[in-house]
Amino acid sequence: MASNKHIESFARDDLRKKGMQVYVKNNDVGGAIRRFKKRVQEEGIIQEYRTRKEYIKPSQKRKREKAAGRARYLKKVKKEIAIRGF
Image (cartoon, rainbow, N blue to C red; front, side):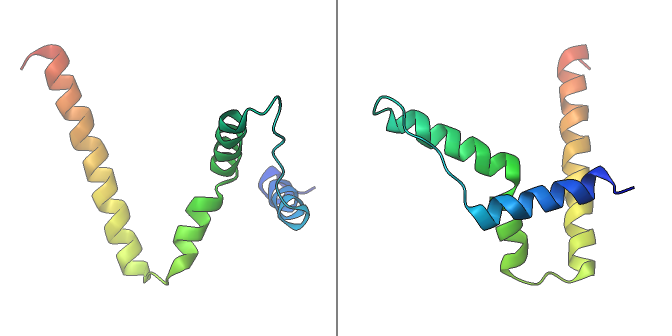
């Protein structure tokens, strides 16, 4: 039995082969653009583009992930301090 991740990748590939369509209703171009951006965000197209843009060495990936984790931790601690007051 195939995993959900595997099935989702096939669905994403089908979507890319067909192309993405967003319909404009009642000349509401702004709404269509918002729906398009939301769909692109959900599919992770921009994120995938950025990761494939250039090769990043595994050591650099680990360094970047570690820095992001540290930033999340510090943000959490700062928020707790603001709530508790010390």
